[in-house]
Image 1 (tube, rainbow, N blue to C red):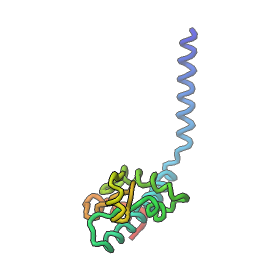
Image 2 (spheres, rainbow, N blue to C red):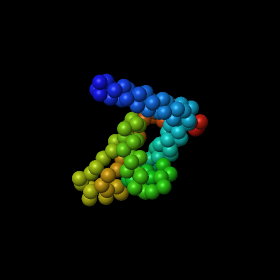
Image 3 (cartoon, rainbow, N blue to C red):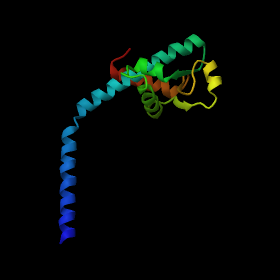
Image 4 (cartoon, rainbow, N blue to C red):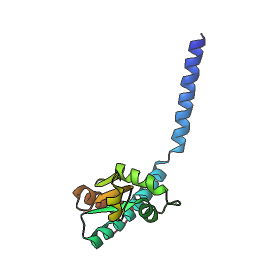
Length: 137
């Protein structure tokens, strides 16, 4: 009897949590937030494009401060979080933790950074698609 009562209570709690979570999800707002994040990623990627052009390179390396500044993070250390998110969500972006800090320091980036492949066709497609979605150029 106690087991049946426990199972019923767990089922009731699960249904109640599910209904509460459904109320919290507003798909239009969630999409708008997603578009806002994508627009911020595009800001970082545009900064990366400028850096790559200035250095005449096919790969741009950005440290957490640069990413945080272009993303609009409140704290510079949030750049680490954004770098990880971008590496997971944007093609052509790789999160690196360098063991050869001296070599990376010579390139202007030491320790953890993201590398963005400028010529990656998937990245170019992602940027075009998200520029269109966010109302960019």
